[in-house]
Image (tube, rainbow, N blue to C red; front, top):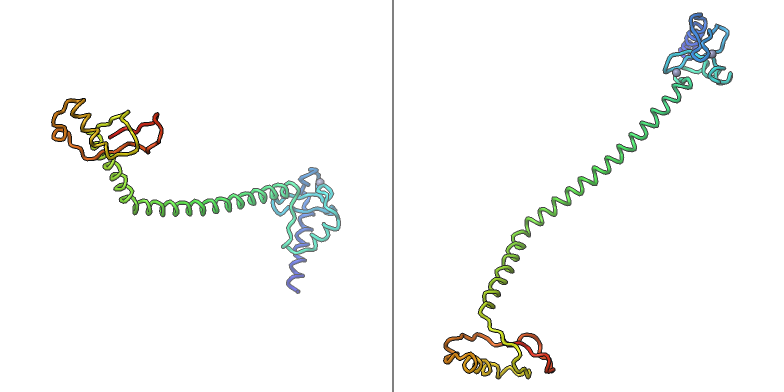
Length: 206
Ligand SMILES: [Zn+2]
Ligand SMILES: [Zn+2]
């Protein structure tokens, strides 16, 4: 307690000395701060101000003068500037939080991508070999079809059992191939499409 009182005493003494310094001027009105004037020193810019120039009430002044060094007083311009800095710091903090969550999302996406790439690598062989098989099958089908003979507008009564004889007679009698079965290898005879019982729609014979 004694130490605190000593501290207060020293501070008041300091304030008195500051005030009695006839060189000191008020930063606002540029007039001398006399020892009788109530004045405060800004904790940030260290300038001296009449309390009436800074619109500080006598009660606040008395409180500040009696308080210990923990309470600081800022002049109006320093207060404005420090509030701006505080707002800016707040914005910086918010932006930092946003960036951190964006980075988290980004790294999660990268992890997902890596997982997909791993899956893709694992499946690549079967996907490629499946595709290659499809292409080869199609080529084979095409090469088989190269030798196909397709006849259209032949009588179609839905009964395909006579198709072989019909074909044989076309080859021998119309195309003049005397030994048709020896010259044309018939692997299969089919009708293309579904039988429809109408005279307009005749399935081609292959
Ligand atoms: Zn002044
Ligand atoms: Zn100041």
